[in-house]
Length: 360
Ligand code: SF4
Image (cartoon, rainbow, N blue to C red):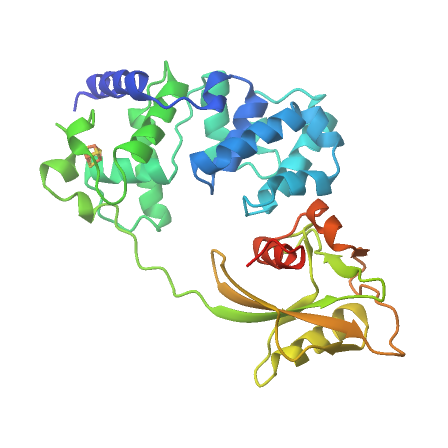
């Protein structure tokens, strides 16, 4: 195989067609890091405005380290996978505390930062510093499995190792940043999952899948397990002044640090209003009266399960103790106009929109 020729073809193609993106106009490792973290689970067009707002508000690690986690999460709201934002906040504090505010420039130091794994470390090292670390993301896995006709299950570590070996072999060690971005760009724009545009691909003459008319065969991924579905009931507990109670989720929980209406999972044989009464008793030590029917129902899919969230209006019964979070996390009474100032998970945000008069 003429690897040198393949590299040249790929890099020439990339320089001709690459899409302009704000993080491609910089070599600042901080900005490249932000963009890589955002792009991990998010499409480019969706990430772009978030990236612009984020770097305008936090232009360097020092400003991010100084920020309140609440402000970081508020800016992240809507992007999902909130552990990314919490980890970035911690990593910024590491950069200030352990590296004097300067973004580290060795692989070992970079991978030592909170939330940075081998993929992100390789992307930062190659793009910001032109160090020869190959990147392997979902796009690269697709391109390489088609290029080399790798038919094993790409969910297996052994297959991923084999693909990483090919990525390392292919890497242009003199221009690793551009090469890695070219491979990812090829997967994102040409070697797409459903119908790759092989006639415009720089690898078309040597690609195993294309030459054998088998692009639909690669990559092979074993079927995912069916996601469980849960019914969640939450109570919008309102006091005499019309303020509503919101509670902050623990940092180490899923969606940690975000605010929500208290509630939880319906148990077998339980009516939904009873779920709200039980959850509020357990979480806040209060005795509440709950409407019989929800005022809003929201469906939402997470990566490992799906939910239907039923939101009920609730009031404290006379003689109830005042609410106090049993897990020690903060709770707040807020007026509806103030809900916009707190970061909520998506399903809860739809409920706040209904409460503020702008939701369906
Ligand atoms: S020739 Fe087609 S299948 Fe092969 S790498 Fe290019 S776009 Fe993908």
